[in-house]
Image 1: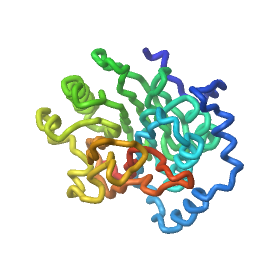
Image 2 (image 1 turned 45 degrees about the vertical axis):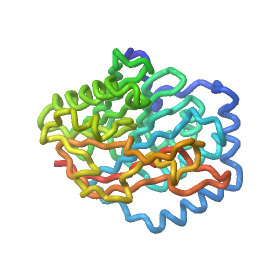
Image 3 (image 1 turned 90 degrees about the vertical axis):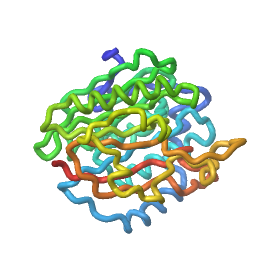
Image 4 (image 1 turned 30 degrees about the vertical axis):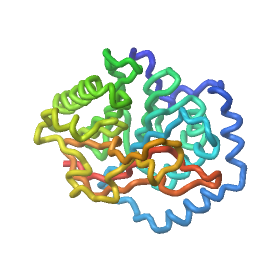
Length: 296
């Protein structure tokens, strides 16, 4: 399974297509009139300057499986990454055309780690000037019927070792038992890290609150949103009332995307991707989570 893992800073991606969307179609958008990028520059002027001692992280299910307006949505994703300039980017539902498109634009600044070779997978981006990658691995969830796994990376940040994790837990309400099993596995691995290591997990957990309540979570591990006082504006990351990318018969609001931490003090949290693109769609059907931490 470890053979599935590729670090793109040392191995460039191959050219291929995914369905009807090709890397050429995605890259063609770079030269188009980019209203979103101009807007990003304007928004960036209002973004606080990153503090050197804080680690910033963006986690986002980018819904790569949605074939609608992929080129513009891929460009929108890159614009958000360039705007917020997170130290760590955790992505779920990544597809190969997105990898190639993002790599073309961000490989100078980020080390890419890909968590699979299937039709969709997870990925990490680590800012080269801020983090030094030490190692990375994939741990498969053996009972997953959807090929889900846990992507690990160990890195150094300002002389401190950090363990970074991302995953896309089993989807759909009917798969609650397997999803809880996957959550327990993540909590166990976070607990097993050496005491002097900061551990950060971010991803699309698909968890419901009643499922989380069945899992014993050590006091040393906390939910970012809960630790910051449960800000209402950051509660729902999958919100079909506000996000119109999916045609849903029944509207729903869920906190599927979550961040858990150990040996880190959270400072801020905000949702990203709330603006529609020129095509009338959002970058994803999920909102992303951008957050900052101090390491203990």
